[in-house]
Image (cartoon, rainbow, N blue to C red; front, side):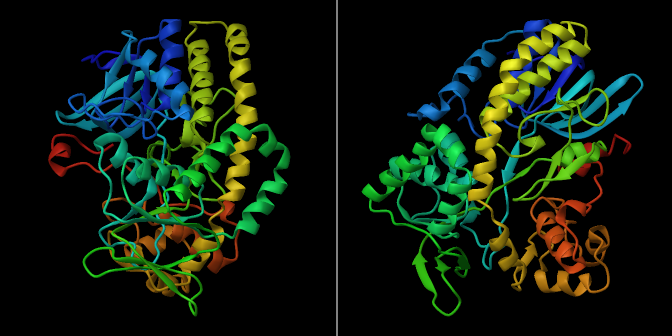
Length: 469
């Protein structure tokens, strides 16, 4: 892995997480000239977010479940044939007869890179959960708390409460507790009986993946030994505080219970990064049950546009092992498209990755069922809380507008919901849910915001010398 000043490659890969690394390794082995672009200075993605080189961290992601990912990362970092382009955001993607052009923004301003093929492996992010009080300092995604711990060795404001539906918060809470942080409570929105029914529905998958499930079980036991209560059937009603988070109110409205805290980690699921695929005009589908837009692809991970490929959480949030397998499949598919390997060889080498992906997808489906946030999201949509934090648009303002139009782009223009700095990453999924409910349509039939350049925030100064596409 080397820094490189070239501007033209055989393949450009957007994202340095497990999927992007896996694809780059396959392509480098085949002899392709490829570069990996990432917003972070070092590779690893969110799951292996690395601290700065000058800040060595003790016991960095040392759990056994991270071992295969750490091994791949070490191989990737030692691969001299791969160009690493860190600290850059991809803000635009255009396709034409001569190939594909990426526009990046970084410390050196805008830069244009071209390639015959582009792989988007942009990952996912915490699904924002707009409970009353969610805009207070100290309210953040559980994944953000984990990133602080991994990359900086920082524990968020203590004591910490975790609230949500996703079992990942058990692992994050245990990591923070193990590091010396104080966790006040882990509260599951869904009841233990409801989660148990999901497990029964996927009994065979649960039995085949006992080692994965045991990670959550070990984390729960570790938390309980540390005196951290893990409770079920505890729906979050409100986050309290004036200038920052001071407590979390749980339970039914007529039987509230408040847990004092200095910060709260919200863990209701994750949304695929879809900004760049949608800006480039790729076909997407609604990703149930958490929501967001997953990019469509064929058996080789090629999107609806020839020469543009996708892998990992961009195709639907399913976990790092699946992302790694999809990256390998995409890398082999691109290598075959470039004529570097034969189609027969690509098919043979991809077979074990397809098999492991198929098995892991069953576990991902079980996890989706266990962590289904639908009821929690429906409950929030009925409150008069802020839906769009950038433009301070309330749920009541959205509901009032939905009385005259259910087109989300029209609602956006009328209320400014989705017009802020995040461009809808925080609020679009809730607006779509509310619009679908108002119209009585399935979520899968809804359309999202129109994708436009730039796909990521960029300073106006960087754009002054560049005409918009």
